[in-house]
Image 1 (spheres, rainbow, N blue to C red):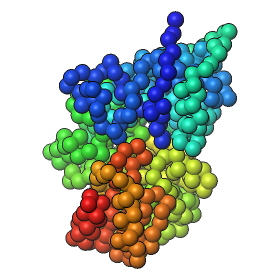
Image 2 (image 1 turned 180 degrees about the horizontal axis):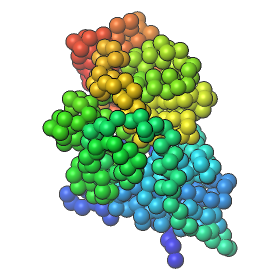
Image 3 (image 1 turned 135 degrees about the horizontal axis):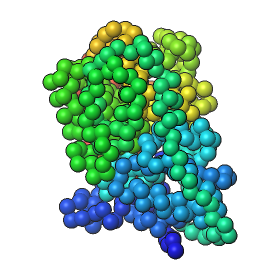
Image 4 (image 1 turned 60 degrees about the horizontal axis):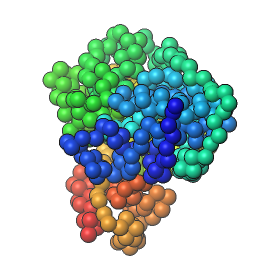
Length: 470
């Protein structure tokens, strides 16, 4: 008989559920003794607790069917089974699409108009797992949009099992999902580029291999495409430099046209140009915004307020509507729906598309880059250079004791600037600007800064960091 247990409320976060899987912790783990990296971990969750969350989810949604998919983590199949048990115990049905990327779950939810769960801990290490949950139509469940209610149901754990359990049915979506992605490309116009692609042993390799087969003119070197939840080669987080060193090396040694990498659940994508230089996420946002605005004149583009001024300047130049929004997929998606925006992007490598149910996707940006390079017949470094000169710091994290005190110091120091408090504090001068925001889950302050020259950027970056770290 399935066992149910109480659930620690700390596993319910702002945008998702995330927890330590105790069975995967040993003395060599940074999580041994449950002292770990707060950004990825706050509490533990057993399979019995996953069943309880399944029951809570069944009670939370109105629909009689819920879609489940899961990433390559060691614990994911067990969690998928437990979640399905919990859901079906209350008489609701489950469609299990098996191994999938997060953007594939969004497609399933949107195309079937059903709530869905992706079992994943994104870029975090093997000892963790979690869930990303959406309502029907790929509408996010997060803090302020259902996560608190779901948490309370799970913590109370007060459910009456159905007399007749629901059914769990497996369904293969690959034959539908890859054609869905291919609508964003013109295969015959794509040039025969040389590409190095790194999936980091996450689920991105399963999608990318099937997708890139549809573009046989490409010469693709596949790095770590085999899904492996032990992540034996490097962490599936290409936004940390140490995890893309091999990608950079292979791009330059093989004289490839560019490199591309995905995080563990493949909803984020990262690019390296032909010289091995990483391309910041806000510049990819700007390029993809230009691409979609040429095809959708006057459309709205949503971007996060950390971004380079390049985004708004180019959107305005092309006659689009540039809309700045708080960091986080729930905010970006909500604003995109309100504005009917064709595209949205974040510095963190999340890119959102109206024709993908306003959800993020790690493969449409690759198709857009391929099309842009083919149409303009230039290198990726030249495509980025066509944006103009912008000097950004990238996101810099600082651990602090009191995030509120940091924000107050900054507001006092830069009181003569234009101040915006939509998300942390944004400080805007004519020649430079920055955003400082606290982490949603941890005692961290995140800085993103831009200035008119490399030297000024470095000087102002150091000035603000000194203030943050007092």
